[in-house]
Amino acid sequence: MFEQLTARISGILGSFGNKKLTESNVRDGMREVRLALLEADVAVKVVDDFIENATAKALGEEILRSVSPTQQFIKVIYDELVRVMGGAGQQFSLRKGKLNILLCGLQGSGKTTTAAKIALMHKKQYRFLLVSADTYRPAAMEQLRILAGQAGVGFFEQGMKLNNPIEIVRKARSFADENGYNGLIIDTAGRMEVDDAMMKEIQQISKLVKFDETFFVADATAGQSIVQTVSAFHAQFNLTGLVLTKFDSDTRGGAALSVKAVTGKPIAWVGTGEKLEDFEIFYPERIASRILGKGDILTLIENAQKVIEAEDAKKLEEKFRNNEFNLEDFRDQIARLRKMGPLSKVMGMLPGVDAEKQKDFNDRELIRIEAIINSMTRFERSNVNILGPTRRKRIAKGSGTTLAEVNRMLTRFQDMKRMMKKLSKNPQMFDRFNEADMQGIPPLT
Image (cartoon, rainbow, N blue to C red; front, side):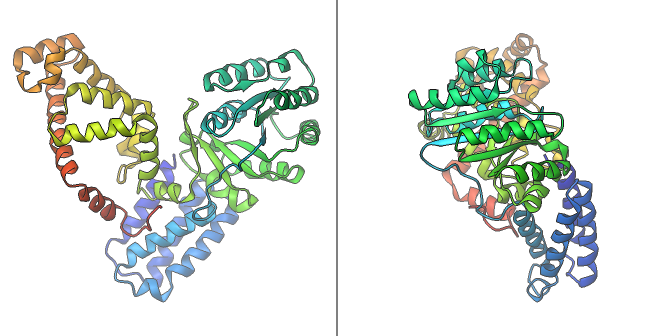
C-alpha cells in the first residue's frame, strides 16, 4: 500500500540531504509534495490545506534554526499526514455493552466479508449474530453463512427463507434478544451506484433497530471518488465511521488521505487481504510512518503476538541464549511467519524496506526453505554441523532444490543464529536500532 506515494515522498525528502533549509528549497520541496499527493489521488481541497499548513510550519523560525532542519522538515510532513487522517491517538474503538452495527456501501465494496472480520476481531468481547439483509445478490446470504462459520460466530439462518429485508431485520432483532446475543451486525444490500430505493431501504432498517454504529464500507482502490459517495450516505444516515477494504492493493492512498478530512468521519478499520484475519485497526500515526518509509514496527509486533504465545517466545529466547536454536525451531518460526500474511507485507512493516525491496521477498522462498528442512532427518535438523557435502546433495535432491540453495539456506541460518544470540544477550541493541531508524519522527506510542 502507498507504494507510489512512499517512493515519491522518500525521493523528495532525500533530495534535501544535509542542506540547510531556506524559504526557496522549502517551497520547492512542498511543490513536489503537492504533486505527489495529487498523483496519489488525494482530494485537491485536502492537498491545498496540507501544503498550506506544512509550509507555514516548515518556514517557522524553530525549523529553520534547528540543529537538524531536514529531520524537522520530515517531522512536519509526518505531523500533517497524521492530522489529515484523523489525528494522533484517534484510533477507533467499539463502545462496550450491547452493540448493534449496520454496514452499508456500494456493491462489491466488501461489506459481507467485513461483517465477519469485525465479528472475528471482537469475538472475545461480544457474542455476535450476523444477519444478511441482501435479498438481491445471488448467494449473498450463503456467503455470509459460510463466513460466520469460519469466524465461529452466530448467523441468522431464518433470514434465508425470507425475501423481504425489513422482515429479516425485524425477526433477527427478536432472535438476538431471545438467544442471548449482545452483538448484532446487519449486512445490507449494495448497488452499483447510490439510488433512492437503496437509501429508502436502509432508512427503514435503521428505524427497526437502534444502531450504535453505522459504518460505510468502501473499496480503497476507488481513490477520492468514494468521498462523494460517503457524503451522500452521511447526508441520509448518521455514519459513525468508515471501513476501507482492499487496503493492501491501494498503491496510491488517496482514499485514506482524503476521506476523514472531507467528511469528518474516522476510518475505523482497514481490510488488508482476503483472509478473515487480514483486518487492522486504522492508526493515523502508523500509516503516516509507513508512507514516509519508516515502517510500522508496532503493527508487526501485534501481528506476531497473534501467532506466537508468550510462553513460546520465552522458550525461544532461552534457546538463542543457550545456543540451542536448531533447524526444527527455524522451520516452526517460518510457519508462524507465514501465518502473519504474505512475506512482502510483513517486510513492508520494517523500516527502510521500500516498495522495490518488498518485491524481492516472496512466499516461494519460505516454501523452498521449508522443503529443504523437511528433507533432513530429525537428527540432522538438531545437529546442523554434521551436514557435509554428501548429506547436502541428498537433501537438495529430496527437496527439489539445488546444492547452492541448500548451502545458501544453511549459511543464512548460521548468520541469523549468531545475530539473535548477540541480541538476546544485549536487548539494548534493539532500542538503539529503533532510535536510529525513527530519527526525526516522534515515538508511535
